[in-house]
Length: 157
Image (cartoon, rainbow, N blue to C red; front, side):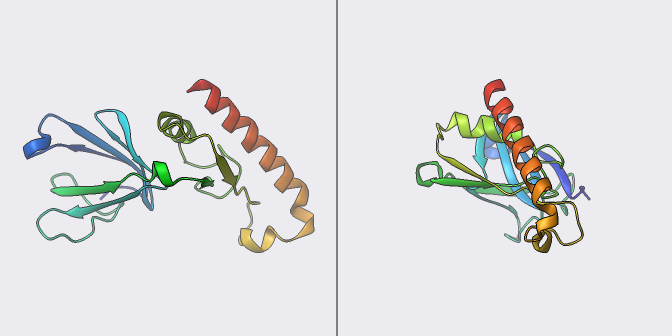
């Protein structure tokens, strides 16, 4: 069984023989590459199903040897706002999300519109903490750190 955060690396069968497909996941599928080139990325639609049954192949619950089918649809022409948050909802770079890959994927499709950022304080209930004034300074610090990191990633890709 795979971890709750990770990358699945798939080998193509039949008409996809000789191709590779990689998928980065954190609870759900977010980024993918076909032959090491960005393919389908959040907020595109992507599901992976067991090829023999059509049942969903849950990101953290399929194994080596499973035969799966990947179904994806690009939303690039429909994108007007991309909402981003790190895996732990804190500032960009504090969790497990690969923002460098995300920025590269957005650049590859020519996306030049808004990114909505959602960094929240590291407390048991960050959604309530987001409204408490005692965390206002931390929210500002997280927002500033996130913007600096995202700009750096944007320049690197």
